[in-house]
Image (cartoon, rainbow, N blue to C red; front, side):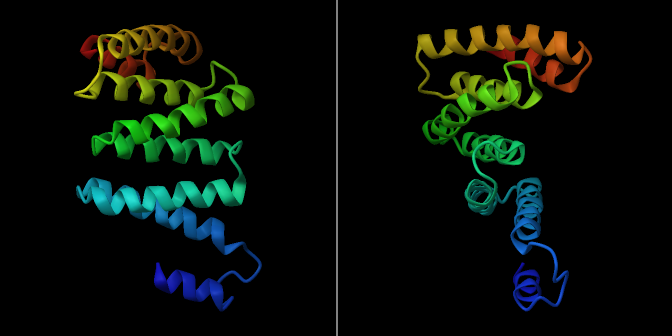
Length: 164
């Protein structure tokens, strides 16, 4: 990352491109690797940086920003930081609904991620569990209609619904 930043800063590599996009993509890929090797604290820092960077560079309505918000919230949930994840998702969901619509893949993923966090939280209330199940039932129907029953998102939602 330091070499990439230096090369872009000096305009040695791809002088006509915008280095921020490339650096954010590299950081996102590095976060994926940290997750794979279970270095979750490092992954979380990068996810937060990538999300913040995309917000600044592309704005909250960018499809890319919405996608990295899901990754950031998912990482928070993996670390059992459910309240923080909920804040990110509840900020992101209205934007996705407005920009992409209710049945868009990203909107469905945001709802699914939020529902997953609701029922996985050890401090979940009965109301949280009901909300999670209701959301999962709703998005399962929509995802099945939009994507088809064999789509990986539908399969994941069905699994979560049984688990919830």
